[in-house]
Amino acid sequence: MKFIYTNVLLFSFLFVFSLSHIRASNSAIDNFLQCLPSRPNPSHPISNVIYTPTNASFLSVLQSYIRDSRFNTSTTPKPLAIITALDVSHVQATVICAKTSGVEIRIRSGGHDFEGLSYTSNVPFVILDMFNLRSIDVDIPSETASIQAGATLGELYYKISQKSKIHAFPAGVCFTLGAGGHFSGGGYGNLIRQYGLSVDNIIDAQVVDANGRLLNRKSMGEDLFWAIRGGGGASFGVILSWKIKLVRVPEIVTVFNVQKTLDQGATDVVMQWQQVASTIDKKLFIRAQPQTIQQGGSKTVQVTFIGLYLGRASALVPLMNKSFPRLGLQAQDCTEMPWIRTTLFWNGNPIGTPLEVLLDRTPSPSNSYGKHKSDYVKTPIPRAGLEAIWKKMIQVQSNNILLMQWNPYGGRMSEIPENATAFPHRAGNLFKMQYLTLWQDGSVDAINKNIQATRDLYATFTPYVSKNPRETYLNYRDIDIGTNTNGNLGFAQDFFKNNVKRLLEVKAKVDPSNFFRYEQSIPVFPKKQSS
Ligand SMILES: Cc1cc2nc3c(=O)[nH]c(=O)nc-3n(C[C@H](O)[C@H](O)[C@H](O)COP(=O)(O)OP(=O)(O)OC[C@H]3O[C@@H](n4cnc5c(N)ncnc54)[C@H](O)[C@@H]3O)c2cc1C
Ligand SMILES: *[C@@H]1O[C@H](CO)[C@@H](O)[C@H](O)[C@H]1NC(C)=O
Ligand SMILES: *[C@@H]1O[C@H](CO)[C@@H](O)[C@H](O)[C@H]1NC(C)=O
Ligand SMILES: *[C@@H]1O[C@H](CO)[C@@H](O)[C@H](O)[C@H]1NC(C)=O
Ligand SMILES: *[C@@H]1O[C@H](CO)[C@@H](O)[C@H](O)[C@H]1NC(C)=O
Image 1: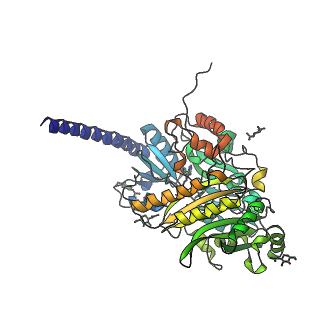
Image 2 (image 1 turned 45 degrees about the vertical axis):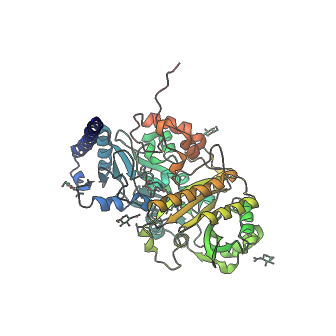
Image 3 (image 1 turned 45 degrees about the horizontal axis):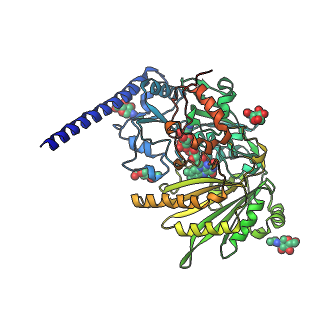
């Protein structure tokens, strides 16, 4: 009897306790929603862009920029509201009202965050969705462009190509990445060795700060402008738009894609690739992409070498013969095309695909589960190391796509000091690696198994990659390296190395109340007593 009674009591207590919890968060969101129209903008009424779970299209708006099925389940924590800003006044209202009502926001542009941190969280939150803010203005006479946060890379590449055959912008390979997240985390692609990262070619930005003010480079100051170039936008403010410097490319450039399995001597080729890929002519970028494949009845590793050369094939073939003969690149492996067509080639589209594919905002395939990690390599991995890695790739692959992308550095990347922007991974790196595990089975078992497989492969690399810190690319978001709980900074050291100190100073200055926060944001520490 007594046992039952205390249980009932405990249960009622918990019930009332959790109800009051729900009520508390309800009232914060109610205050937020009531606050929004208090800053009226007659030409852009904010009620047209507020979605709560009672709006019929709430789920489809949420899902339209979810890019990983792991965060697309019925149990994934959902936002209390989504504000699909159409105007800067909507961004300012969202920031001011969220701050005064104590609601956390998550900012989403392209939605490609590998851990879904732009649209899910374990705390109550609302999404500030930027996909409607996507204008792009390319100005060839000044060789610049303005691009809003919700624009995709495909839209940018397309717009540039409509105005010039000899201009480009150094940024990612995947067309559907958003300029908001991608640029603020660094942004690299196959122009990295010649022109550096996206952040190395940004000359101004518009940001809404924690007080709802709209700032540009001059009014925000060089500290904040430094931090949002590589430090991630979402620790500091809402990026509305970027002003970028376009780069020049020849009218005709050359690409190739050559594959070698282990039987065909892939290990020898990778040994030589490690020596040359970061030191060869900076007009040449050669990605090595090892992948576990089926061969006959068993598994092996195949390495794909994908190249972009900012010149003609007639110059590339002798260059490769001299510096990288083990690949055996022949003229017939090379295809010449305008730069814009290389963006489709690198994305895996067949030659001849219409350029308008660049404007498609939905990636294909649109639904896949994934786990990603990254590492930096500073000394060549010895042959025995490569052999151990191939063995592990074969061992942990099952019912999934298991591949790695090894992207050479050097060239322009070694010329830019580590502290020039918040992105710290510069000279001294041979290449950066991405681990990609992609699968289709949504069962808890399959998810756990695939995440574990990725972690096991990562563990195999420990002897061969950077240490103290084990450097990690911010845009290859990886929650395994830690969060900011209790002011923990381990993850920040991996992402930002020696730039952590300045990032903490900028954060304390521009957002002392820590309004712009999420699981891996730069924290604010209580002010130290000055002695
Ligand atoms: C298929 C695929 C291919 C990729 N290829 C490359 C590649 O070639 N090169 C490369 O460098 N990276 C690549 N990435 C990683 C990519 O750069 C990051 O995922 C990047 O953060 C995506 O930006 P987003 O705006 O699309 O993502 P989101 O998920 O919208 O945002 C990512 C982060 O930025 C924050 N954020 C977004 N918008 C804003 C804003 N307006 N203001 C402030 N903060 C904001 C978010 O809150 C979140 O923390 C790839 C990712 C995928 C899924
Ligand atoms: C969502 O529903 C509310 C209440 O009916 C309405 O005011 C608002 O305009 C709706 N949002 C959109 C984007 O239609
Ligand atoms: C998310 O779910 C919706 C509805 O089932 C689906 O249309 C969409 O393709 C899914 N997206 C991803 C990335 O899984
Ligand atoms: C490289 O050049 C040498 C000398 O001209 C030639 O014999 C050889 O066939 C070339 N190799 C390739 C792969 O073209
Ligand atoms: C980077 O560090 C160097 C050497 O410590 C210093 O001279 C320079 O001013 C720093 N640059 C920036 C942008 O902080």
